[in-house]
Amino acid sequence: TLNLDNIQGDILSGLPKKALTNYYFKITDAAVFKKDMKAFIPQITTTTKAKQHRETIEGFKIQRKIRLFESHSDLGPALAINVGVNIGFSKSGHAALGIDIGSHNKSFALGQADDAIGKGTHDGEGLNDPEISGGGKPDWDKEFLEPIHGFFLIAGDSDTSIKTKIGEIETAFKDSISKVHSVSGKGLHDKKEHFGFRDDISNPAIEGFHQVTTTYPKAVKPGVILLGHPGDPNVSQHQGWIKDGSFLVFRYLHQKVPEFNKFLIDNAINAQAEGSSVQDSIDLLGARMFGRWKSGTPIDVVPFVKNDEVAHNPDRVNSFRFSDEREIQKLCPMAAHIRKTMPRDDRSDEIVDRSRIMRRGIPFGDPVTHTELSSEKSDPQKPRGLIFHCYQSSIEWGFRFIQITWANNPRFPLRDGEERETLPGIDPIIGQRKVVEERKMSGLNPHNAKVELKFPDPFVVPRGGEYFFVPSIQGLKEKYAV
Ligand code: N7H
Image (cartoon, rainbow, N blue to C red):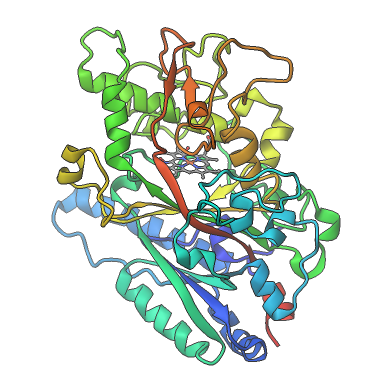
């Protein structure tokens, strides 16, 4: 069984977050930091607490629905959600504190800025982020090019409660940390992200923690996400204090919404369904790029006509395997975002399961404006996108494998020896290639899989990121505190 009092709350349960701030810091005095940390540990939100918290919110929602149904008027008082706090440390934070986390976590030991451009990586690969010319650095916001030792993740119901908590943190660590930067996000309407698609549908269920009600996908072993458990590829090295920790990949991803919409309009696919409108053709292209309609309905299940119903059916929204004949890509294109990032039957369960990640991100920035939409250009003064967070026991098998071996690779998900005149192409949302001509994808037209669409400038632009280790409570006590 899992020790839920030992695992930080965001990993398996997710801290309830209407709003979130990541507070990045540098450690200015390691000895004082360890003392401050000792006093602060009771404030770190555990999985037990996060779970209780979620259950309270769910209970409140049900009550609210009943009351709404009965009276149509009295919604009752708003539920006060407490603020949750988690903490993580980068490679330079570990160096500052003199903590050795072991050499097998290679990408963590390198740091994301170098990994982004493939500098010094163990396999010679990189994430393919754009590079500052001649600078040997990714083209990121300058704050993310400075060493960040660690971060507090503060999640809650409003900016006000988060601000209060940040004040408490700054007081508690006033002689041991200095702020490097912060980013804040908030949930958009209806769990949608800025492109208008519903997110937060598919995350791995963990054996012994989540209930699974459908036959597929099955729950994965806890060690896919948590270190030191069966399923962790380095389980033999990860005993003791490292157990129950997890690696968090943070990516600060800007989204170009007007440009994305323009692309859909310019390249709309005639659905050839009776009575279909221009808007239907635009929606069809978007759905084929993601593998889901905006509502969340998978196109593998409902391919050609917009459908919201399946999205609301928990038995059907995620229980599919890409049943398509691979040659014709009639249902879900091979390079669609959800097929690149979780290929289901394209690979064995073993290969798919070891690369599952727990996504916990939140959008940042305000929704796109009419002015931007009509000018077909993002306003640089109004940045928006996704604070992408995902947890895994191994960055090599988790985020990095998905990004490099699947999303960026035009051949994937072809199998060894499987040949095609036209390759599947890159993930249209997150796939990155240095060579512009290679930024394309086939299978978007259900009537002719060989038609390739070239992507103009990327719709998702990385502007920062880092790899963090999020230790267990026991680990915090033993190593990060005195
Ligand atoms: Fe993606 N989006 O919000 O529009 N993603 N993602 N992602 N993504 C998914 O199935 C999106 C990014 C995964 O299990 C959905 O829950 C955007 C990165 C994985 O079937 C939507 C960005 C990586 C899945 C989006 C972005 C991933 C997934 C469908 C960037 C990892 C689950 C909702 C700004 C390298 C696949 C759902 C599965 C689903 C969006 C980034 C991974 C709508 C906008 C960087 C594993």
